[in-house]
Length: 492
Image: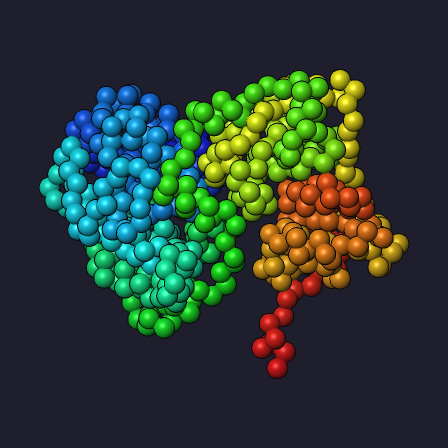
């Protein structure tokens, strides 16, 4: 039986009575973990840091978790391998690596087999995304290849970016890693049967690739036909060029998460306990004034805009929360004070911990309503509709508009005259913002623009106005002159 658990939706497809495969997909990280069981035993592949769901899943089925398989040292999240092994007695398994680990684990060899109930996993060493990257090929009780868990080696529609592990040695480059990946795909994965199912570690929205599908699994045969990186007639040089083309710089927290996954980390329960201390408005204010804690307001952008604690920054919990926290807060050890919708505080602390931010030190008890009722100072950010912006621009053609989307989004289509200032590079982007005039800030849908405005507001910029609904609302209004990027080669 295959299960695909995505948010609160579960799709079950009958496969084989000898096993049960469950994909546990976490949308905010675009990450897929896997729980596979057979005849009283189970494995978990690439678990998230909060391990209780896996433990409960095993207890529900009455199975013992025998192995925790890791496909590589993850960069985009902190894995739950250490805590899960301690809680269940499972053995942690990695592919071949020379790294010194801060915990007990088996460094397996290429081709090594692992028996789980009536099924067998074979580790295939597939360097390229990282040096230790490995896939796990699943065979049923009859020895037939059924599926392959590819980690960040092969995605649906894409392959893992080969630029993240360059610092592993002095002579390692992204070109060398891409060349390794070319060989791994063609020698280890592409020779496998077309009917096996590919289960990757990520889908669309992850920064570990550039062209991932929104689908979270597929047959290998379909990928051979549709994945640009698996073209049978592709040369090594073509592969390297295409895989490296268009890669955005990775978020700054990636190397730090790698080291946490290699060296170890605090127990997740301790992290949650530390971060979920309820603080009265007075205690919250004292903590903010007496420490270097950052005030992180995780409410929806338009709710935040109306009233927030001075110097708070807004990164909404219902967007790409973990990715933007990792991109915009450089220090994993930064102390964080949380403002959240009441009842969501534990969720916030957990999602911070998923990407290594373990030093939340408490939250505002009762949320902003309690802060306001206590008569504490508040701040706000003006937000207008796309229609209002159109009226302003009509009266003043020199209206300063700031587009904080990614460069590729801006190049695809933007308001004529808008200045590109990507949120991803906020320290450089803010240099474009003068304090002597009003700037109207938009992104694609209104999430990133409020993040941008809140950060600049905390740095003393009082001249930013948010455009609610972002470029989607702008385009829908039909009131703006838009322009598309023209490639220089098309001008010749």
